[in-house]
Image (cartoon, chains in turn yellow, brown):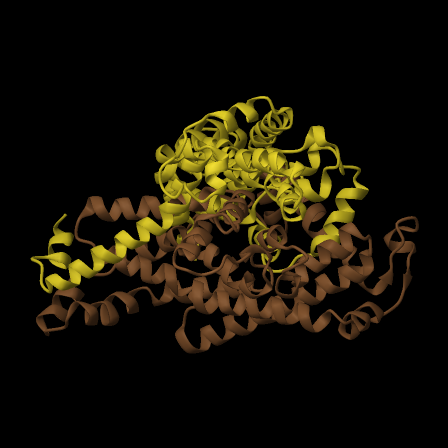
Amino acid sequence: MPKEAIVKGPSDERWFDVLVYFIAAVIIIIVLYPLVFVVSASFSDPARVLNGEVWLLPKGITLDAYNNILHNDKIWIGYRNSIFYTVVGTLINITMTLLAAYPLSRPDLPGRKGLMLIITLTMFFSGGLIPSYLLVKNLGMVDTMWALIIPGAISTYNLIVMRTYFQSSIPWELQEAAHIDGCSNWRLLISIILPLSKPILAVMVLFYAVGHWNSFFNALIYIRTEDLYPLQLVLREILMISQSAGVDGGNVGMEEKILLSESIKYAVIIVSSLPVLIMYPFVQRHFVKGVMIGSIKG
Amino acid sequence: MKNAEIHETAAAPQFRPERGSRLIRQIAKRYDLYLMLLLPIAWYLLFHYGPLYGLQIAFKNFAPGKGILGSSWVGLEHFKRFFDSYYFGRLLWNTLSINLISLLVAFPIPIMLALLINEIRSKTYSKLLQNITYIPHFISVVVIVGILTVFLSPTGPINTLIQALGGSPTRFMESAGWFKTIFIGSNIWQNMGWQSIIYIAGLSGINPQLYEAAKMDGASRMRRIWHVSLPGIVPVIVILLILDIGQFMNIGFEKILLMQNNLNLEASDVISTFVYTTGILKGEYSYTAAIGLFNSLINLTLLLMVNRFARKTSETSLW
């Protein structure tokens, strides 16, 4: 890149480079250390973790914690549910966002500005938690899986990103030409727009899917039956509720229980984050692209 | 946007007929576009404007049996009760202080990170730094609080270090004094990389000749950052600042809820968590709907003020 050459050029102020590289290294260590610690602790003898012996590498390597998880039904049910919520939820998200973003990207749609206003206004003012909760309750969705899928069917931010992409990346002349050839709007959307939109669709799938996988609050307020719990809610019980048990438990009988719950915590963090982290290296570029497209609109 | 306008006029001559029926024809010709919009718009009306309609319970004594319309009006009673309540001062103080400190401390950090990344000469090293700092963004808030819990527990690595240095262990997660530090610190840890992306993009768009000229004039690298890099991304900074302030009263609600316990409540009780615990858990719908409305109104006012201020002073604004 010639630009690099001009900006960065032959190095002046060597000390400045040293400083920059040093700070960067410190940042990398700060970001990675907690993650490395959790991984190491998950493979370590829980007694030695509690003793504070583990600080970087695993001590007394054991797979007990993972074994424990394998036999924990709650975690498996949570996993299954989360996969369901993520797949079905994302499918609905994409369909709804597409159905809104495409027509609103058409410069020849009468009333477009008014419709956009209806949509963007919701970004700045909302009824708030309680009226939304009562609405979902009145619709009879409480304690059903729909409560986690329908109320969040569209993210306005994602809709705007997708619309911006349609406007800036798909030539309007192409669509007009298709029209003149007698192509209906539905066919236009399915056989011309969609194939040209693979990059943005990838970004949207990722944004929505990660959102579903990581969300817990809607499940917390809407879901009562444990069989419907997504993984994050199961996690919350394991990570935070067993912690308060640890605070109270001063007696000896509790010790083994604490040890067990302590050991499972680290492993559960790893197991639940695994899908996203495995996917991460492959999709990282797409995420970045999504943020960029979003910023065009400003 | 400009492009779209040109297209609009370019497309118009196709539908020439008399003025009155022209619009109807335009609409009729595109009925299938409206068909596509039917479901999403219905969804917006139901799930975004429905709650706005339901907000009237803030001025009523809502009883689930009577429904929204059947419940009796009580005017501003719920607001008065909230302003007079023992918790009001604490809730408002915690909400404002957590967000204000976040804005002052956490907002500039992604900017500094982007400037740092921009100064790294090795492409590999700069990519490495970026990709590593993005990772925490994808970890769920439940897991983040889980990591905090084990990391800061009396037997965790931080306390082990403190003890090794001769200090005594601290129960960080159960301490009101530490709450805000931990909350904001972990937010920075999780989000600085992700939030720096937009700034990095802005920096890569700066004309290289500006740097060259500054160098000719004998500007040191620090001065070039200050006088070339930073001014180049000021518009992005202003927009993101406005958007951040637009979310001022809501930041981090889920995480605060997860970190909250009886021992740190003094510092962690904020308006949004209070609405959750009193409204959803205890069923005081009208009272907490009023509190939620109060929260939204402050938020909206802040947004409008900041946007206006930005438009007057820097020509950059949301609208």
